[in-house]
Length: 214
Length: 268
Image (cartoon, rainbow over all chains, first blue to last red):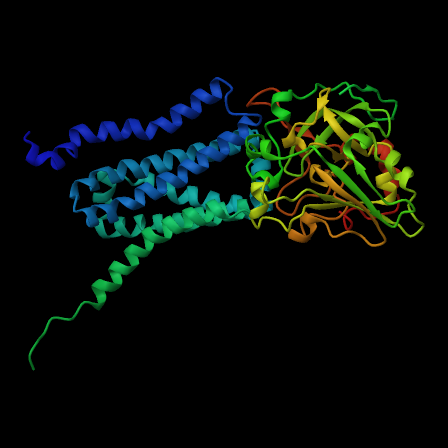
């Protein structure tokens, strides 16, 4: 390929998707190795629960950034990465939930149920995971055909709700430390990504109606 | 820091001592940041010499003690205490120090001194966390006079046979082993004898979550989580089961009588 089509070439699905896939697996690989080598500090269980949660939030931000970046940079090919990034968000959310259920609760269902009642922020996180599971389960092409594009899209707008739930979950957890700096950062990023969408919808609606003559 | 074995009831345990590495890198000391790895990373800026402690308020002999004099005020003892954090984790730490009561007796509290207030260092220049609005600085803690006089209540200068690492509250701190860890103020600069219950830092920040007493109690949950169990740091790796939390952190036979007749659910 010539240099003129460079922008297209590095976004060619053949080259980019495997590379992004590997990149997305790096946090997992790092955490797995650190856990195995006992390099997670004094409280490895807490470290795993926290970092899988952090990575869920980060992947949620990255996934929700795809559409704005695609439009603003004029790179339609970015859309091809969205599904994979969304599935990685689910992957890290599932790891987060599993770490909590296993390391913190010893996989005791009764304990978990009691904890969900005791701690609303666990309930909020649980709801977010249920929604993400629904989105992951309907992420393949056959599901789109089965549901119909319109209904599928409506369902997948639930990711905006997941963003809200994640921030609430994080906020509530940090409320104990009275430390909201990081929460504010993620809220600002997600707020900007959702705000851009809202603004675009509004702008489209407010666009001058086609002139017609009486 | 040389120390003799303590004869105080409850001052030793057969439990496995937490690794020094864990005890000195996993800390809550918000003056140096809210992440548990922050204090070990940031506390090197704290200047611990010269250091003095103002002992004041309702006492016959108020005085400003230089650290050197405090170190010699009573024989240094080694006390191996369980430490239970309100967050649900615990350690076993060999502290070095002596009963706070040794100091209290020296200054002769007046009859109306019913509480002791502990004020800790809050220096914007050396403690980066003090610029945050996480808590109302300086960090203040308090004890009722009988709690402060209890032989288990330790004025500590060292741990693991050494002087305290800065992230653990150098050059001197309090250790009250039957209460949640945050009751034990670090890097003390002022000890004040007062008539009314002191306004403590966490109680001011969240009165419904952190009571003045904050005795370790598996039957009184934190409003947002259970206190029935705890994770012993360094015990059994990732898949270890949590331990059951003990009443008064296992010091019930020593301190239970201090709270006879009190409703510990109300006065949590």
